[in-house]
Length: 319
Length: 129
Image (tube, chains in turn orange, cyan):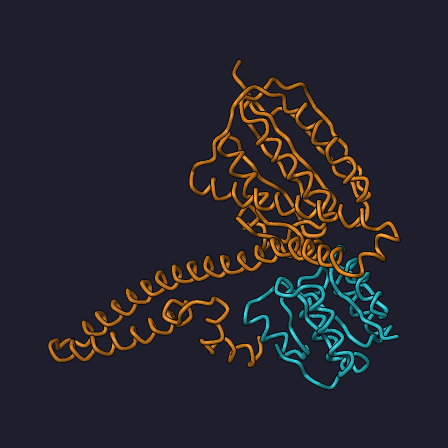
């Protein structure tokens, strides 16, 4: 870092603006405030102890002990403020992204409706394009509906009111249906889907439509985040008493710094945003909740530029 | 015929924009991401650029900065048309040299056309929101 960067760091107000918090809650300010507090406390303690204690060694011990104690305390305090500030910043970022995601299909609906209702529509009708625009209206209404449904699901999860209808189902059959569902999308994106079942698995007791949502999310992401052509490999196998499913892609991958946030609400990795600006950042959050409510585990392995493998395990039915 | 470069990743909006502005007698050049947008601006020297801010490859802010720093493109007026509406985003875009900033949801297609026409007929006037 050069001098300009250092001076920038010292400018507390500009640092705090990025958190959008009042200054007294901003971690940099808290850090400086605690520093000032430490200096004054130690000076004060020194002054008081010099008055009442003769032994200089004892005075210095008291002052040093106090200074260390306050330093550790201020470190703990500043860290928690930093965590709060980071959470606040992520909330703000999510609101911005979410507003944009909801508004994008709205804008589409609005402009197309404007166009169809305007005097230019006669030209469109003559060229036979009216139907195409009407299809766009339908697509975008669906897009909005899906997004709003996801948001509602997330709310339900947060409130602990996310019910599931449990029954026995076979993971392979469910995955077959998902592969069929995504066939045309994969073809349109020049992606090949390969589905392998390593061994026959007994049924799982759970909510099939919810688990299907997880598989759909994995496959959708795998296709969406692969540039040009690629291969998506789905594998089902058995790991002890658990069913294991993984979806491996050759796409943009997830940078190391973003990896810890992947399952968080509204989070979208930088590599994802650069590839495709549409995407709610909610799919994996929902997926994690579903898998965990089924007493399973979810995770991923990825390197930026080298694709990602998303996996989950679910306990097999004891029957 | 005046040329408008529309940098926007939503293909629906590209299509609608294209249809609307062609019928008004303008030539429309489309770019679906920031990098293509900037390259097309350099190559085709449009009379006006309409720029979305949330774009793949280069963000709208990065494109705006590059446009205003490059001799061939810095004179071209830029209308920012986006759904981002934070004061900090608006300030940043105007500081970087955008002629005007329009929040998509607040404008109908006809209103956008009116704004575009206004700027194309009088490019020197700086129209702020």
